[in-house]
Amino acid sequence: MIPMRDGVRLYTVLIIPKGVAKAPIMLDRTPYSAKDSTATADSSARCPRTSCRRPYAELVRAGYIVAVEDVRGKFKSEANM
Image (cartoon, rainbow, N blue to C red; front, side, top):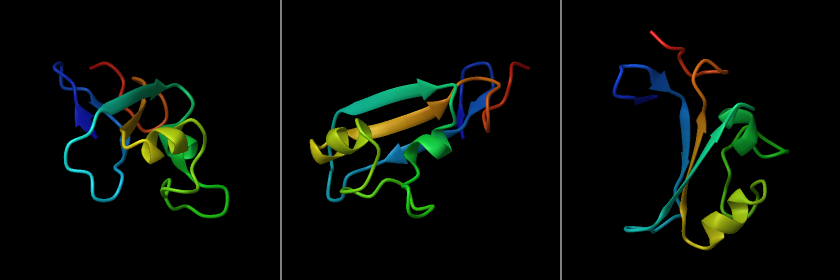
């Protein structure tokens, strides 16, 4: 849960490639469930390097940190206060 300036917390899944110290970050805010968007088809594990939904897999392989976040009031994110 990442807090916003107004105190609302947004559910976020971070996908960090192994061994990465400094990397660019790609943020994807979605109304379609960050948890479901990053889950693999065969398990509840989050987006390993080789089996993740496109385009996330390509970004992770390219060395990007991927942050997938539910928009306000959807799925696990809080609504406006």
